[in-house]
Image 1 (cartoon, rainbow, N blue to C red):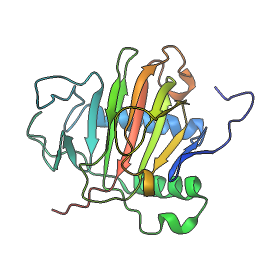
Image 2: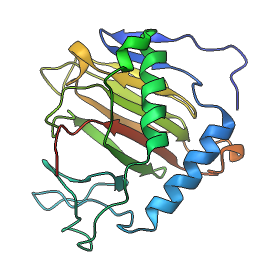
Image 3: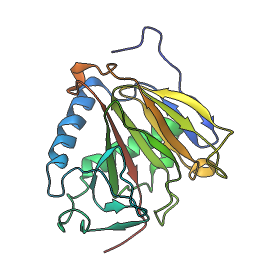
Image 4: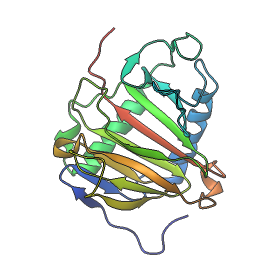
Length: 219
């Protein structure tokens, strides 16, 4: 649902920008439909197994490149061995528009061509610990889109998982971009506010987070 008082665009740290309510309801519905399609294959959504034996509480499906901790591959050897769905051109364009909006600069997106997206689904109990997105060979910005339940998003620093950090709320339709000096910030999701999703998005519960990245890889 739309906020009664519009929230302003805010630069949380240099290069880390929060743009509330960037996606329209129609765009959110379209993304939910696309994510449901990706979640059923060719490589289905799953709880990622961690190298030390743990399992992530979020469920993840990838397009363009398959991610598992510390590497990207074209095929999902840890799931079913199949190649992930292709990264669509319309998602590239959405990523470029997001950068232009966040940085208020059309030139910011001139060379931006994301080639992978990690789609994470959070139920009410899912969390994401503090981490850096550094498995990519490119330092191009990360574009993050939120749909469904509101979450607490913890924006940290580039040196440590601990303080200083800033907690903000990411609601349905919000855009968050981190690049430049903030490209390798630690960040995480300590809480999801259950029951805050707007059914008009097509998602009646839980939170979808779509993060677009440039892997810097070929082949």
